Length: 266
Image (tube, rainbow, N blue to C red):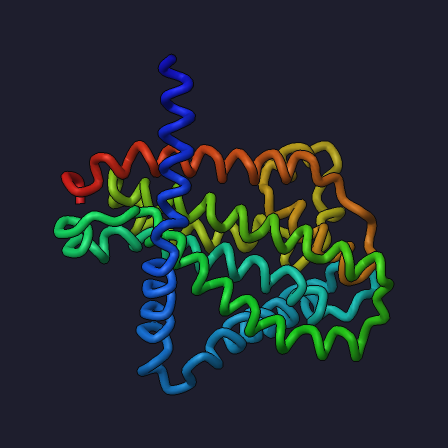
């Protein structure tokens, strides 16, 4: 009986989010305005950040280290991974303060608190779309993709968004219990950038440690993007998808449990 009640409770919890979709839209629009309204370059920052990172990776890994990249145009090779990684990194760093920055709102009125980290994901998805508006004209000018590759592309994109939601829920809920996570978040994002195959090929990692390396779900995501864009070897996606769904499912349950106490802890 308790299990059934728990499932019903979770079902109503999720459907309650859809009932507040207009509030989610308000949070997203407000966050976009706050982020870019007073910025000199405005929404162009969504393009500048991955481009600057790409330039650094080109200098370090291509010009200096001469790492192998299967003969693919190296700037595009980096951007194909940098764009989805930017979604994960930006979501991680914006969602970790999504609850603590709204303490006055949380303690005064009722609304599903999950809308706050979800809005941070939505804002960063907007940045993702803007960045792809630069990437794809360049990509189609340089590459000659097959129809099979193009049709495969939405799959890793969908996985990246699901992973971003799971990470947003975990980090926002953890920040309520442990404020250290807010301080550690930029450091964790920096580590994640270098342990993910953004500037190099996953095949460069020693074969005997590949199982450990693939525990990072972004490895499977990035390799899937490169298969879709450049026709590289199709990666094994089962482990990456399992970890992604584990992040998402456990993130929902952990956030739901934390939300009951968020007004007291915040």
